[in-house]
Length: 337
Ligand SMILES: C[S@@+](CC[C@H](N)C(=O)[O-])C[C@H]1O[C@@H](n2cnc3c(N)ncnc32)[C@H](O)[C@@H]1O
Image (tube, rainbow, N blue to C red; front, side, top):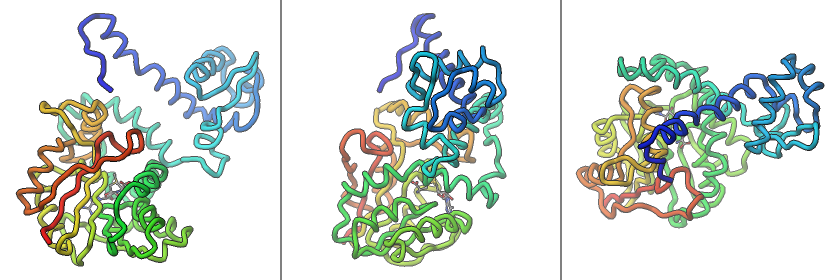
């Protein structure tokens, strides 16, 4: 979707004021409102007493949450919609705690953008290596990917693939989704040890998890051994600079069996000037805030890097519209047979 072109004060105001609804939702999360409502039906008076806030504040907040569909309003009472009652409710087994917390915390991080643009350094540059942070982030990645991974696995052609390396696989959500569909597949998830601890917990809850192995490695610094039919590199390209990715592509080439494929999933830019899709442009801002050298890249540049590293049959993989993680976000390349 194209963002509106800002050529009038009204358009300027509309784009700038888009922070209002996200801010309403962030406040609801900070008040743990969806957990308090749970599966009940509440008047403002009772709910205000239960969570110790002003009736006036809660009335206006809930009206806006109902306006965007997170709450249903009937007469004087409010209740959660099915999504809020499960994914946003801390007392429900389907609560997406780590991902919801990651999204909520980014409100504060994004407020530090000016500082980040000035200095060119991420907001918290020591955080990514801290094991507690890595564990929490890895669960957030699982919550983010668990639905989309199943959709992608259904459409990906892996029927003849026997070995797959999920490089930077974090919780192994994609590896697990591929294993679940392909009984003859063996997969390895490569990541930092703290991320792999989460992957092991998740795999232990699936039958196909027995066919998953673990490779604790800093793959940017340490050699990649093995010969894989497919290397799946999902949502990692944007963490690194063009030079780092190009060097990695050369090393992955050697870790592929002849005819093997590197499949990259990322927020690719598609137009000549590198502006769209909007989500891919805005995601580069996240990379500025949270990584040392990350960015988003065009499909064309990434294909060029792959070609220079010796790959052939470089082509986008098409998924059904609306089923992908990113719009047009899959690119594959093969080591010559
Ligand atoms: C954004 S997450 C993506 C997780 C998963 N591939 C997905 O698509 O949901 C990036 C993952 O890459 C891992 N990673 C990044 N650089 C790494 C490195 N040099 N060595 C090992 N793992 C790395 C991170 O720890 C993290 O789990």
